[in-house]
Structures are given as C-alpha cells and as structure tokens.
Image (cartoon, rainbow, N blue to C red; front, side):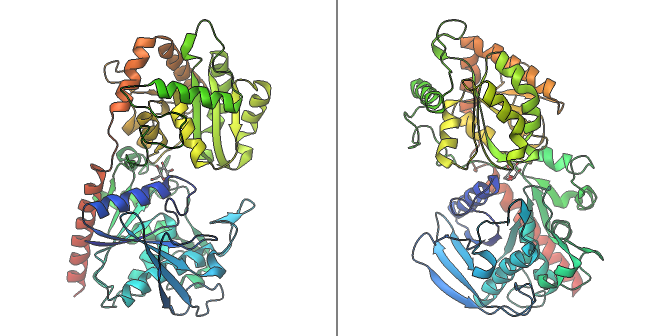
Length: 494
Ligand code: GLC
C-alpha cells in the first residue's frame, strides 16, 4: 500500500516531542511490512536531506503559502530515510526560521499559511507523480490543510480523488486556530470553519475518513468535556470511526544493550551496567545519590528522573507540590526539559535549596535523556493528560520503574505494583493532586527499600514488549477501513 504522511515533526530530522518519534517509528514499521511510505516534512532551518536528494519544483496554485495569497514556487527534496522516503518541503520564506512553530513564546502569526503550504506541496507532489497513494495520513493540526484541501480543492482531480484520508490526534491541546482575516491564505472555501476563523484540528477531525488517537483510554477520555479540549463533540460524532491505537517504541533505537550514549550497557540479565549509569548520572549532575550507609546501602538513594517538554500537560505543578515530600522521604530528583521555564519556577527554587538532591537541566539533549532513562531508578510522569506517552515505555525497557498518573496511554501501559503484586511494573496514582503523587512516591520508595521486591518490579518492567509489531497492523486495519469508507462515499456521490 502506498501511504503519504504529512507531519510537522519526524525524528531525527525535527523534534520537540513524542510526535517525532512516532512518525519515524511508524513509517519505518510500515516500510518494514512492505508498504511504501512517504513522509512530508517542512525543510526547517539547517535541515539537510539524509542522503542524495532529488528535487521537484512545484508551482502550487494561488493561496498556497504566501500570506498575501500570491502564487509561490516550492521545491520538494526527496531522499531515502531509514525505511521510508523523506520529502522535505523547501520554502525558505515559510520554514527557514529560528524555530518550528513560533518564537519568544508566541506562535508565528502565519502558521496556517505555512502548514497550508506543506499540505499543498504534498498534494501537488502526489499529483505530479500520477497519484497511486491509497491513504493520506495526517498528524495533528499541522496536517489539517492537507486533508481539507484534498476534499475541497482536489476532490475531482483524477490523481487524488480516490485517496482515503486518516488523521492521528497526538495532542488535542493544539488546534491550529486561523483567524478569518488570515484564513484566505489556507486556500480553502470560505464556508470551511466558522465566521471568526478556522479551527484546523476540528475541521480535519470532521473531514477525515478515519480518525485515531494514540491510546484506547485517551480515545475514551477525549470523548468527554473534561479531556476533549473543546473537541469532544466532534470526536463523539465520529462514532466508531474514531479509535485508539496504542503507540509503540522503536526497540532498536531504545535498547540498553546497544545504547552508545551510556557509560556502560546493560540488560535484564546483567544490571551491573545500570548501576554504573546511575553513578555516572549522579556524579555528573552533582546529585548525592550514594550517601553511604543505611538505609540505602550500595544501591544508593532512589533516583527519580523526569524527561519532557515543559508544558502544563506534563504536570510539573503536581511535581512541584509533591517534590519536597519526595525529597524528605529520600528521593533524588533529576529533571530534563525544554519549553516554558516559568512552569518549573517552583522546582528551581527547590533545586536551589536541595542542590545536592535535585538537579534541573533546561535544555533539549537527546543523549542526556537516554542517560536519565538508564541511570534513574524511577521515571516520573505526573501528566494531567497523556494521549500515549513514550517515556514510560522507554523507561521500562531501561529497567527504570515508571511512576505515572492514571490517564490516557499511561493507564494503558503501567500496572501498579501494590495493586497487583504479581504483575505490577510501576506505580500509578489517580487524582491530579500533589498529595496523590507524593503518596505514590512514598509507596515506590517503600518498595525500593525492599531489594528483592524491587528487583521483581524491575524485571517485569524490562520484560514488557512495546514494539510496533502490535500497533503497525492496527494502523493498516484503520487504513483499510478509511479506504472502504472513501469508496463508499465516492459510490454514493455518483
Ligand atoms: C504527543 C502526546 C503524547 C504522545 C505523543 C506521540 O506528544 O502528548 O502523549 O505519546 O504525542 O503520539
């Protein structure tokens, strides 16, 4: 099957969050199953194709990109990535900028136009190559224009007419709102959206043949006003055409036995390397994780890691409220994140006070993230909502026990070790309150103290299989359904 993905991020080329890893890993998994996958991505500043590239020069129609609606030329660079074809949409005025989405805490005002250009370029490329794409698979709101242009502008184009569409919602918090006075640059008919503008995520969720999000629990939660981020009505309306498919992780990219960034590699059979990783992490970050003597002995104090975007979603406020209690119970804390530093103001104050127990790294650092996954005893994910989350899966593979809030994909992947002593591979708390997080943290520290019990939790965590072998076929099923739905639509339109 030929699949065209449209996305704003794809690892290792452009990444701010899990979206990038998922697009890359899913594309590769589908490629590995014999499918032909194209990934359309903006050519952001400094982004070079991964190998020799072919250039295709397009002249998309009016409204494709320039904020004033003028005709603009675009190039698409095509190169081989690992398992799929990467298609970089090259338009310096749109994408050769300091950041992907905005600067100084503000979105670029022409984001609608920029991602309309991405979508238009994808559709024009497919057309120039004579069609043959079975499914146009968009990720998040940035693919909204591609899906909507397909329906409103290219619906009668023979190369694009039969193509089914699917949208994956990785995060409902970002809608891609385009005010009416800028909506002209989308190149869509004025009837799309509301009088005051276009909510791209809402419109694409309504338009796509199939819609999914990245875990079954979040698919259920997002149908409620509490979690639906203002889209619960349209998600409910989609009925069984809105499904939850749990993400996987790429087991080859995330493997403590081969991870070159670690001071020492390790496996479930031999955890000596993990202890070396803990020592290395603690020493480099100035955290006193091995105070010597009782109660922690040689294993040192329980080291909690946290890796993620500094985003309200991730529950930094819950952690700030619980951190003091965790540290007093013996925890050491290592936090790595980029984004809005205001979110960790309270944690910074805590780190200043407990400088030998708490370390905060405010930067994006792929290698250090790996060393935190490997060197920590526990990984914190106190998310307020979490469509899937992948840090908890990576952590488990690295023998690091996740401590998570019971929501979205976290609820689908982590089993509480106190609730189910024989199966537990982590610690789970319910209410989005610091006290609930602190309680779970104390339970975890209690378990950590009991060496043999802890070893069991670690062993079960490491034996979980979160590879894409289960999820990639579920995407193929959804594609098949999208194709059938599209064929039905076309038949009824005739
Ligand atoms: C978003 C979600 C996260 C999910 C990721 C990949 O970043 O917040 O939960 O794992 O997308 O789907």
